[in-house]
Every structure is written in C-alpha cells, then in structure tokens.
Length: 278
Image (tube, rainbow, N blue to C red; front, side, top):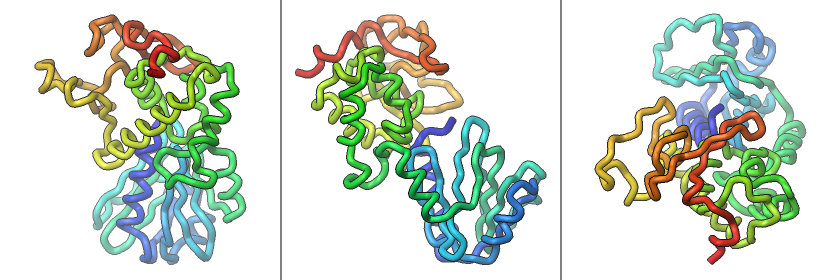
C-alpha cells in the first residue's frame, strides 16, 4: 500500500497539471460514471492529501475522495492520452495532461461535511501544516496512554496518518527503539524526535518520489557496499532486509508478524526506549 509521501506527491502532481483548469472526467470502467458526469467540464480547484487519502476538489460539485488501498495505481502523463482500458476507474484530462486511476479501494464523490468527517477520524499527518488538528501532541496523547506497541501505534492511521510499513520500521531503527516498546514507555522527548524525523524523511520522499532513510555515513558510496535492489527503491536500514547484516552493528536483521504486517528491526541497535532518552 502506498505510504503518505506518495499520496502527497499525487496531490501536488494534480495541482500542477489540472488546478484552475476545466477537466474532462470519464469512467471507462463504468463504476464512477455518474459522479464523473457531475465533475466533467468543471475546473479542479485544489488537491490535497491527509495520510493515505487523496482529495480532488471541485467547488461546484464537491470532492473526489480516493484511497488507493493495496491495489490502486495512478498513471499521469502528457496528452495525447492513449485509449483508456476498461480497468480505468477515473480519467481526468485537459489539453496537456491526463491521469488514470485503477483499482482503488475508494473512489467517491463526497461533500464538504463528509470530507471533514474523514479528517476527524485521522491522526495528524507529518506532511500537513502543523497546528490545530494536525498537532503532533494529539498523537502523543494517544501514544502516551497506550499499552499497545509503538510499532502498531505508528501504523494506526487514527494515531498517525500516512506512516506505513517502511517508515515505521525505519524511524524506529533510526532512534534505536525496540518496536515492541509500549507507547506509554516512550518519553515525550522521544516522541518529538520521532515526529521531527518523520517530517524530514517523508518530505524527502515527496521530493524524490522514493523512500531513503540511511544517513550519509551509511550510503553505499560511503560504506563501499552494493546499492539496494528492490522494487520499493531507496536505501533503508531494516525494511525487507530480514536475515541480512545490519549496516551499523552487523547483527542479523529480525522479522516477525505484527498485526498482519511484516515487522523488521535490528536486535542489536534497537534494545529499548528508555536507554535512548539521553
């Protein structure tokens, strides 16, 4: 499932290509035909993301709410667009660009009120402007009272919106925190450091359209090691590196199932929470 940086990148891409310009909206697959007809011919007023949710705004008709889920994919390109396949749920097009959406979990035309309800259910997003409902202390209040592991809490979109399996594993490694540490055993200082790191890492993810989490001293060039080869791209410390040697301490990277997702961590570098409070 795409993580939050991908959705924020999609929002920026739609603003760049379609904002303020009338679009042609169609649903070759047919499942969004009625709503596409309502949007057709109207300008895109804005596009925004909150966590893994994308919102395409059309002032006169509402918002197209999109959640890619596990199988959703976007294709964006220049016109002339190729003939759409019958798997395209939504095509937006103007004279210069097009976007095709396939296989989303959600693609629905919603009202302002329905959009507000979705935001209210989500935790703060490291990529949204801070303040108000997007205050990281809102997440901290939930984390600090919870006996649930920090690894599970970071993946709970009601606690933090946009963090997925890669960022979860990598930010915990970068701060030396055992993923099984209960949320209540973290300090506020640790939480602030985790949040600040997520902000920086995910902003880089938006800019580069990939996830890179290793520090300069641990890059392939600095360490004289081969670059990572993986469909997910990017240089990482622990994600999908089970049974490989840790770049930092050489310990074998561990993996386990947690809440139906694969968890990755280094038992050598991530030995607790309190020890890292400094």
